[in-house]
Length: 108
Image 1 (cartoon, rainbow, N blue to C red):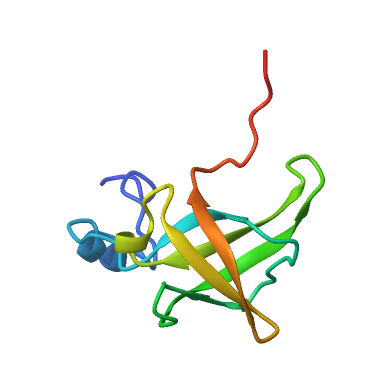
Image 2: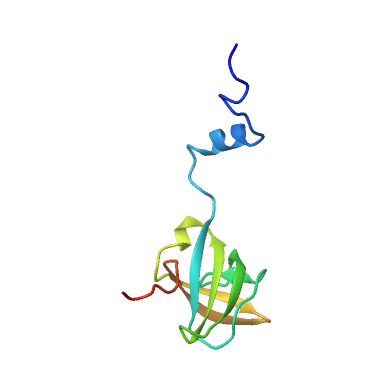
């Protein structure tokens, strides 16, 4: 008789197996602002044409970098570092650039 814990089953096994061969529909990216206004969770991320392409998950001013930073989910086509996007911050489009995460790495 096999041990009951030798092959663990869990609720998400089928969903993970189905998603294993697919590319993701959205990717978490870092954004660095070119202005002073900070995006917040739930704000829309737009492309150059103003089309909503994603949503901010978190954002704040970065005292270390001296700029506003945020993380957002966007389609893979917009996830390339250096890509120009914008965030709608209370009715104004604030320019942002996609950057690699983490935002800051300690030297030495």
